[in-house]
Length: 145
Image (cartoon, rainbow, N blue to C red; front, side):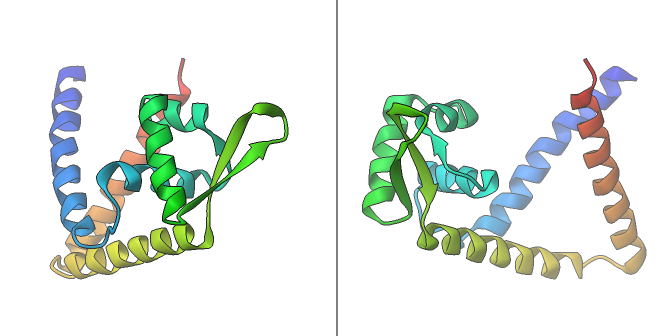
């Protein structure tokens, strides 16, 4: 059973990636790596230091510094001193950075909603149940030692 589950999981990844890439097409105005940084900050909903962003995205700290510099110049992020570590800075999204992400996710939601209408009602119920179940089970697997 483990092998069958692993095969389905691996098959799911390119399907999700392809679907999400299609939904994401044309809604991002940033470079690929800039988008990852802004999206990560948006999802975390708090200011983070470079070390945390680097670890969370698995990006070299030196490369991240350059990306943050570009995003700061374009007013998507702001850097402020870390009150707990005088050597570090905290990076957070500006209003512009938040707006870009909110618009992006609204556009993705709208496109996805259009795609869902291609399914009949029973298929929509099946998809909802399957996605819910996959999310629940993946979270449960993370909780176990």
